[in-house]
Image 1 (cartoon, rainbow, N blue to C red):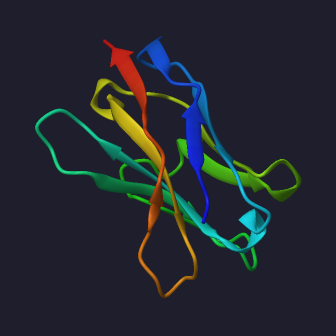
Image 2 (cartoon, rainbow, N blue to C red):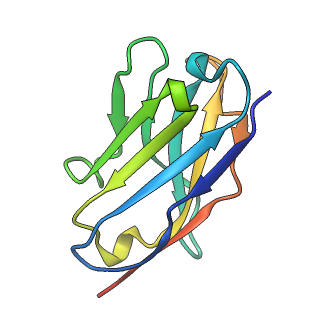
Image 3 (cartoon, helix red, strand yellow):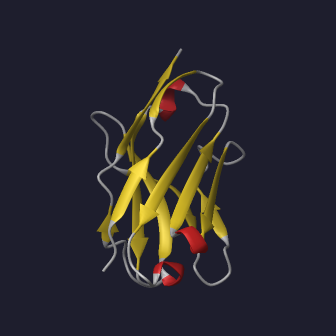
Length: 119
């Protein structure tokens, strides 16, 4: 099992930047597929970005491509989401998630961190 704790959320003006962190417990963090999701008020949770365990390949939602960057530091058991050029529509609760393999769903979720972008 793995436990996930997000941090780094907050209030920022449009055009600004934030970096979210997700600290994971467990000795096998490097083997987990990691992802970031978000949920805005009144909307369903949506995929934001993912990073593979095997080769570090990344994937992004079209809405954040070119603005957000996902990365991981296996030595620190941490995955990051660097968010630049933030827009009011990026306002949401951001969740970190882990999957045991690329063929399995995201099973482990953090508690979420609020990101609010003011116009």
